[in-house]
Amino acid sequence: MAKTNNLEAAYRATTYRVFLPGGICDLRVGEPNETLRCWLETTGGTQFAVITAHNPGSVVVDDASNDERQAQLECDLLEGNYEPYAGQNLPDAADAPVEESCFVPDLAPEDACALAADYGQNAVICGGIDAIPQLVWVEDYES
Image 1: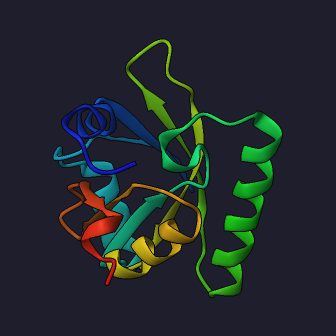
Image 2: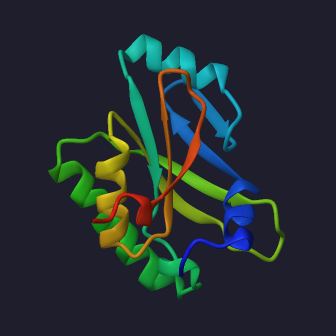
Image 3: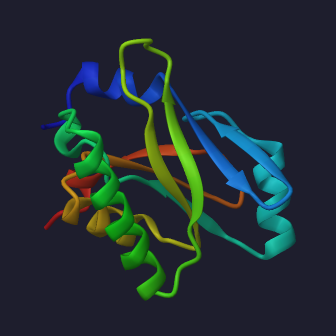
């Protein structure tokens, strides 16, 4: 699915919950998060990404397919020497599905987008040491 105003609004109307050692961070696009900023500073992290393998192309698929895809994404991250942390994408809309996700420290936007493209994703959430999550469209990094 290509970038649309409705799709962008849906991504922005989502809380990206991250389960970090020592606590939970609830991230929103464009909103700084002091807990995450402190965590990045403490760990020496300079960038991060939130990525999922659920519901490719923003089309809802069955739980078993989502679980299998998510497990493979986690394996790909570990094989790439990344340390993913569990997360959940929690949409504001009551009828939208909750998705498992991975919070990945030190995953550059271009690498996050390449991996997301492999899983049919439209976008990822990325940020830097300022801990302000940004919506990054995969198509903007495709060549």
